[in-house]
Image (cartoon, rainbow, N blue to C red; front, top):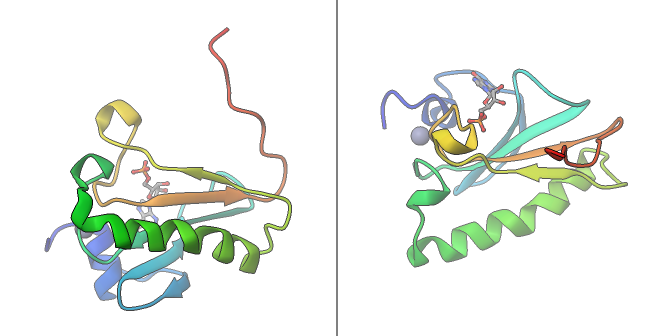
Length: 115
Ligand code: 5GP
Ligand code: ZN
């Protein structure tokens, strides 16, 4: 995936402020944060979105979910955090490389309701 933005970040071709890295995953701060702490956890393996995953990715996805609270704690989010996975155009996804947003600090409001 030569032209994928997050693959380029994974390869170090575009700089990022790293939070965590191992051979399978990378976490880095969002360039345009929506809260005092806002970083993303991505698999190094290119997957367009959550719509593309299958049972072969179960171990990787489980590892990522288990990492989230650990990394959130390391970033000082002791009182909780929000996780967001935007999926597809209908889910507001802009970068088509699977990522989990981890958002916290300050005042995170309850989810906005239509009514
Ligand atoms: P999405 O809307 O696809 O769920 O989230 C994409 C996120 O990537 C956005 O929050 C956006 O601010 C972030 N982003 C876009 N380009 C870059 C970049 O070059 N570096 C970093 N660190 N984040 C980026
Ligand atoms: Zn990619």
